[in-house]
Image 1 (cartoon, rainbow, N blue to C red):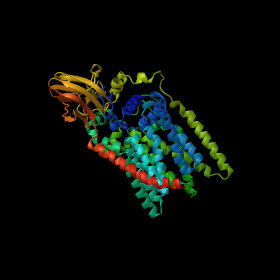
Image 2: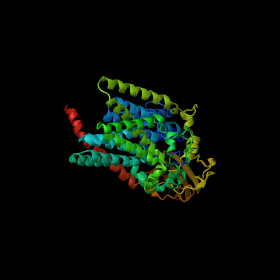
Image 3: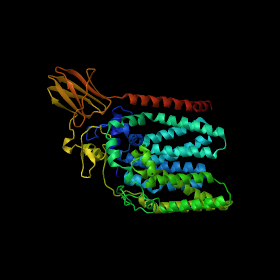
Image 4: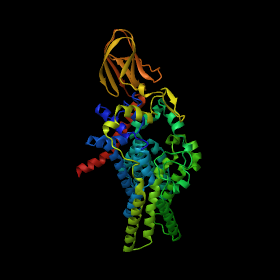
Length: 550
């Protein structure tokens, strides 16, 4: 996989939890051994899902595999529930098959290895299902349902959450247009606002510090300016029809190393469903036509956003630049095209009556589903297989060198960089520079013993004879504090790697601590999430009371 870092990240999460951190913003090992605030910026939910599997006995390696499998299952189930709510059970089964075997699903799992985005595709159907529930129901459970699903999406992939807002607005406009009940419209608007704010509040502990503190990292300089210029990664419309399968990367132009095809079955079903829908329009039959046209619009919009024709939107909405690749909108296209495909069965069955309609629907669903699996299963295979284990995948060289080289955008801003042969930036660190000890004395004399060396808390017993400059082999980032016998020391980071340094006065004895603490914005974000959790409990309380009484 391109993003072959997941076992290391799970390993570090597991290690941090064993050190007493329920949500570790900072981890050691990465950043070329100097540590960095990984989970302050990278969405953590997928690794907590993998940690569940690890805690019940699976290896780190198998836990990541099981998380991918869980993503496939949830995506199929979510697509089924959403389609069932619209067109019934049999067409919903087809929607689940189509969404599962959509080629971009295979690209994310077997080519890119983009576990967060892949898992986001599993949650997206539930977000839209909860929106439907908000429109059709007036109870507080619908608010809770949407708040939780949107929160989970934020914690899975915040970059996917942002374009989801486009679709949430579209859903709102659609429901306002189709509903004739003004009271229902107002209630839907109010409940959507409540649910959206509650979802943002529940996930604020992650996204708010990530949004505010990203300016302290290399992400803007490295990621958005060099690693992914969105203008280079538009899809050419011809690639929807034919785009050869491969395990390479996305390139400028139409000759990519990985596929962006929609699949001929998907295109055929889309055209078929539109054709039958037009026939229904001529016959003046109104079965679900408004919803179908809405999903056709969402499908076309999603595909449009992947092409260069949408550049006027990308150029003006700067936050979209963080998406890096316009073809990420295929995650949404896959769902809506699959729903349109299920409508083809729904419409055709409506042309028949009685038992014949049931027989036709079963035959169609079975035939199209088997054809889809048969034709596209070849893409759901790894490029190659090899033998490995947790020990190999979590070795010092693997964590601090190989994985650190492939992902360092959250390293603190100001760390010295250099240009590669491809004219991209990388850190000015050679393998020989990887830290072998937790600290070094730059000047002076003294005896320092390690008492504790956790990711976010490092304790030393010191006996200093003369003024001593101590360098901690850890990057400085807002939140790090140093204390000598309870008195705060001034931290300096005026060196090429922005490593923590402190001056220890002569004749100093006692306890020296370095602690990674919450900044004000992290504290505020945590408080917002805690209050949102209380509100969530308030919404659920009446249902708990009713259950107890029953």
